Length: 494
Image (spheres, rainbow, N blue to C red):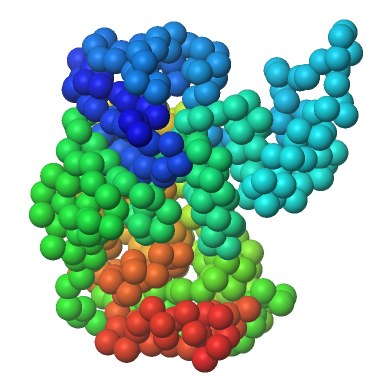
């Protein structure tokens, strides 16, 4: 059988930029085809051409071997092409049933056929092995359940090509596993799935084939079983990456931060550890283990109820972020867009946020001083984008994360707490972030790294703390830390 979908020699040019240069891509019925590449590789533009948001300058789209014209998103929908974006297009105040049929309600004469819609919706949900209350308000559902609504809606609209754009970004590991099961169920309906993700582990988990784009060009299409993670990385970034985790031998100094018997309600219970200058200490654990709560407590966002914190050997009480900053503690939050940046502000303004007092005279920010500081850290961290005066919202995820790190480095911290610093950024940006971590530690900074990506923790950390239900389940030196040992501690088996 021929491909369900073919995109042949697609070219798309924007002013000054060739976003797609003769890119070809195909999808088979009942297949999951992963589409990967760094930010700016052309993935989003290709999908927007497929879904009718953009019109290709050159090239052809075929469904079942027949050329089609996708003039707009409505035409794409009529052709059976559906896109589920990271930000789900759902109506949170309406019910599941309303969302499933929004704009496509079934009618019996002049009246809406509610019984028919319920029966059809129940049939599709059953086929997906999904249990949802059709009368529940969508805003009350979990992120995973809302995603199930979006997928079921696509099937109710007779989608034959389903694009899933970073579908696991808002999900826990448990919910992601449910999504993978659901994706396999979709395949049994004969639907072709285009799966876009920065997380290569997911590609190997769920995809049959993978296509790599780089700089708007098609680089590789291969069965997932025939390509290694290292090969994918090399094709994506266009250079040989010996390792995703460039880690130097540490030059460890004195204890920078020490925590003794820390407690916060039932979320953190009797946690003790130390971080020395020049080392990276990782914190592993399942979602809900208390990792992020610990980070927020050490930065004064949710102060500890019990225990002691020492900085440079001196007992301190941190009750707000200002105190933490004065003590030389910086915090990179897990949600950079909501907690780490002011998106409408310029790159320059964001880089100067933490040190506004040093940049101000008589209550007014000295623009020249701020510009010099912003230039210094944008060059140092290689922040790429439209320029320092552009809104930080216009930068890629990886470059936004560099700005978050840069604004704190401007305050010259001694301890840097990093909560999920590589979440939602592409593999090339991850390599850059890992190199930056290594350089900062080599420069004497004490780093506490919290991550849900176990390979990242194993690759970048000198020691690894493992949390389970608010307690420190174990501490492993780098040479003794394995995925099996960490998971045993994180799940309470060890």
